[in-house]
Length: 274
Image 1 (cartoon, rainbow, N blue to C red):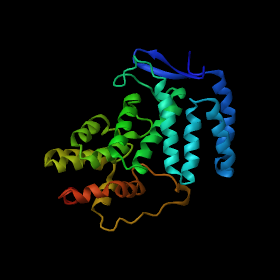
Image 2 (cartoon, rainbow, N blue to C red):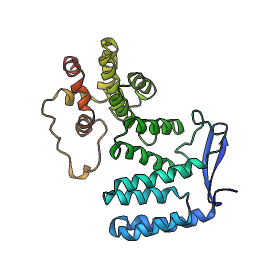
Image 3 (tube, rainbow, N blue to C red):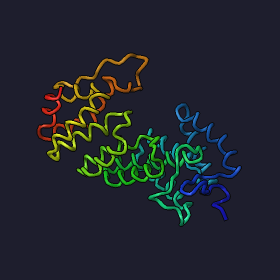
Image 4 (cartoon, one colour):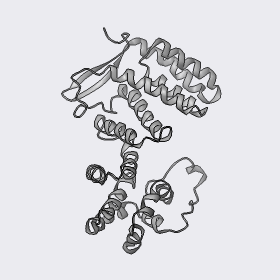
């Protein structure tokens, strides 16, 4: 019997799967949408609706995620994390034994997969900020990248931070080989430079620096800047980041600056390159 006749996993090709949901689920989305609209204006009502959905449907991944978001807004971070854990466990319980977690895909392109992928991504972020468990966080991102190699959730930027923190140089270079020329963010290409420098491979760092600086020149300038002042941001751009802009470079430094400062000669290398 399918789980409450509500959610199950179906194979759509040799190595590709997607979630399927019953008519009851799609009908329940009317209540879900109502609760989402109430999250800011009346969070108590939103919580009651999300909880009601979960009492009726244990596999309503969107309800888990949005209820966890409301709890996060209330600074109930551990409660939010426990909620995501429960939802993720129910999700994984639907995976058939023949699902290959190393080869099979659960791609973002299928709308039905997105609620579970969002929930799993949210749990990884919880491991970062609630438990400070970088290893577990990175393991979840690794699985998400196997599920969706095109990385529609931006896991590569978060996992490269984990790898730098854990000093997993081989994994940084492996990630850079796969995504380093997909220039959406400076995180991976500059991590490649930094890793080569930490390994004493200056020639490779020099070559990698060329690719990184061509795509994100402001990041290099931010690395050698001694003040690291936040750039002025137009009012209509508040809450957004301009790809390749000074604001993106500033936020990059806030996240990754400590690795440049702790790697001997790394900042001097960038200054020399410039």
